[in-house]
Length: 238
Image (tube, rainbow, N blue to C red; front, side):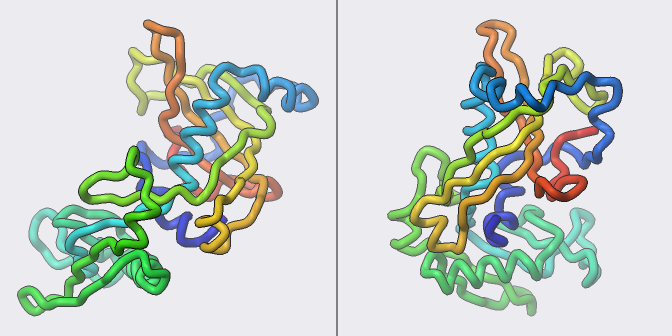
């Protein structure tokens, strides 16, 4: 998975809370041999693919004022170690250096203009989309502050677990399921231009039931390398 997309994928959905591998306790695991056929049968397979694609296969480009130094809500200047990056006055990420690298890389690709200016003796940046970025944007998922460019699609390959999911950090009046399996990334032309290639990874997705029409909607998910323990992201609450 392309590094730039990993940086921005965490911004695509609201992060719920951190999690670990403790979400499988006392829950039945499906027969792995039947996983591939099951993946074709589950009614919310397409919804999981849509959610994974939105979360993992879009580049998210901001437009506005970026403050890489950052201030906490109390007005105290943050320490160099914990300095958050602000976007239009709101905390965007705690890793200022990595995110600024992403913005400068997007500028090099002709997607952004990043202009430095001084405000109260602090360096800030005015970030704007370029005509190239505007021609590539997905209008459905972009807005006044964020331009989103699709870099590929996620296709569910197997389902290895599909269980009811209960957690105190989730609304107790709603019904959730935890679905785990593998997915394949299929980059489009833009994704290939960013260095993306085909690949198969594991996922876990949290989905929520709409009791009125008996359909599920994607809430959030995590991805990881198939041959590694744990997950590269920690969005599903434990």
